[in-house]
Amino acid sequence: MEKITLSERIQFNPMFQPQILRNANGLKVPLICMEPGQFIPPHPGGTGVFYIVEGKATMTIEGKDVVVSAGDMIFIEKGESRGIQAVEKLLAFAVHVTG
Image (cartoon, rainbow, N blue to C red; front, top):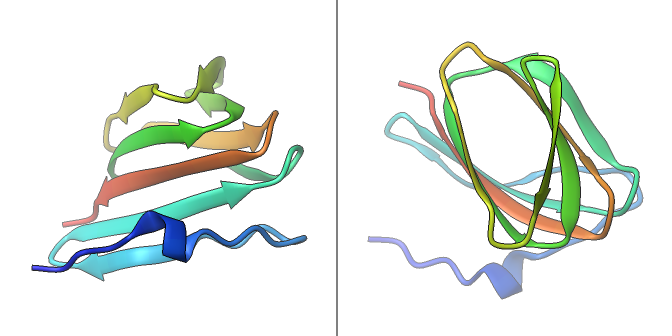
């Protein structure tokens, strides 16, 4: 068992860098703290679940832009292209199934 307190891990930087909360047993869990305009370019990946904690962003999924905001949960299938750009200060986390 591992308990993580998100409020202790939040870190916004001039250059976006995800904080990996866990990377073990086929799961990778990045914490995404982005200032407006910061982005992750579209890329393929494993099955992913994204939860938007605070803020607003545009996700590009398979070439289609989708606006997401606090309280939204997004499910993305293995192999689908995904990217995200913060519209407002953004706090989100993802669970990627890598195994």
